[in-house]
Image 1 (cartoon, rainbow, N blue to C red):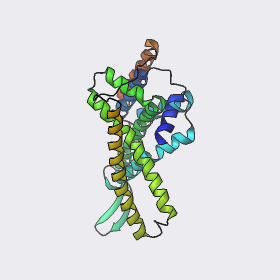
Image 2 (image 1 turned 60 degrees about the vertical axis):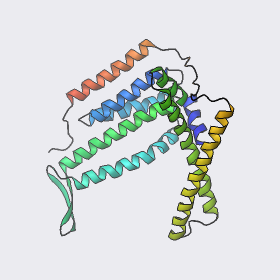
Image 3 (image 1 turned 90 degrees about the vertical axis):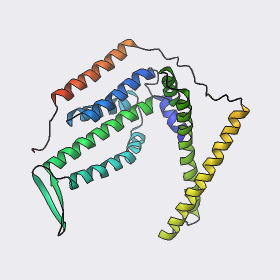
Image 4 (image 1 turned 135 degrees about the vertical axis):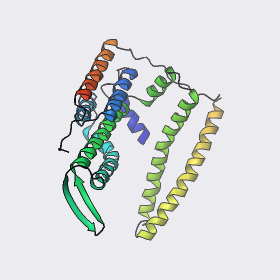
Length: 264
């Protein structure tokens, strides 16, 4: 269900007819520029550009897009808060005594560092989701094969990608059954139910893998998955535009290097 839903989004977006290489160059280029930027300006520009491309040009549903961002964004916020409250450099803006020997301190240096890291992470996530939501996974594997990546890695990636959604779907079904049987009525019951769910997932996933291998052997599997041919037309003009945009972002990153919001 989850696999089919994500694939439907990637197959039916308004950027579907653009060659996968162009979208990969744009997405991966934005990721590399964002994580190497030394100022908050370029990641913010990348966030705006990739969100515009995903929501306006590709016309991805806003609610679905925000739902996908929620989980990784939560981890990013927690990590950044740890940096802001535990690093101490520059002028102290806030100091909260917790114990006699420990204070939570917010300084200009830690705030600048935390905001920079958060902007990098957010820009990287937006760039990654642009590629994931506009490019079907089959095209990604086909492009990887054209880049002469060993087929063993591609086959392994295909199996892992498929079983991620199998694992999620089975976990959702087991959890729903446990909730209906009041398996999470108390903390102790919740821990027991979670352990039983983990064990069941391991067994079910193992069985599903064996069934998959049996099905592939019945279909004369020779150790290599077949890949669909990429019949999309490559647009040199569009690729040139993407490269020009990435070059512009690099220039901005160089000129805004060292920019900070709060004085050191």
